[in-house]
Image (tube, rainbow, N blue to C red; front, top):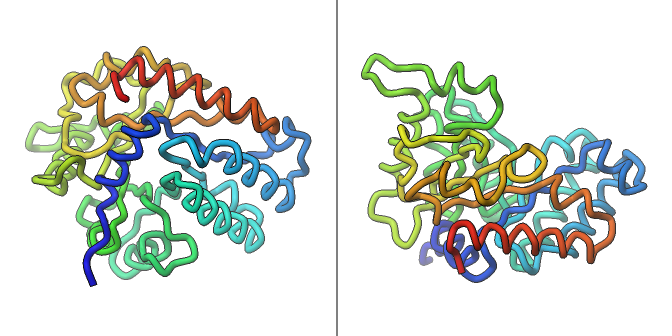
Length: 281
């Protein structure tokens, strides 16, 4: 059986055709209340289906945050499975935001949960943490390659606490964050038009010129909208790598629900602003 098309190639095409916007699906309790929904599995399902109905046929990427589904137990995970399936059927790529990280057979089991094509939660890509050592991610890297999926590895995150680990300097003089980026560059070497192994890099971090962000893969960039970053900031933050940035907007779009037209209009505004800033499509 031939290998499936790599995630990086599918993502590049989706970004070129639909623009590079990623919309987060973050059904936290306060947002459910804003939408007039109960904080239960039924409210969760109405919320998620509305977001998918509104934007899955027009944005490049949807990113459900697994924790907000898991808190409702098996019913919440069932909603997450349907959300992933319906979003992918509508043409969006799904990045599962679960930030998994472990070692050995446990990491392999996490990878199988999200990156194996037969898994109920199979997603186009998964967020993972490298802070048990980058090599601990090898089971996920291998399975992603086999099944045409991708990874987004936490590298330079937007939360202020991240700096104490990610900006720490190793004995070789490189920071931990720079080391993660170097590993990803090696994973993506020779891949065209875009590698499948990306980094999570916050859009709120300001000048990152000391880091080589042009590592051949996509850059998932949270922070646009409610966290304070603007689309116009992206070129200054990401420099030459800006064309490979996938900016994530969650609250900036979701607060316009439950009205489907409001969600679509908000997503379209952000997509237009991002295209204008990064020169895509």
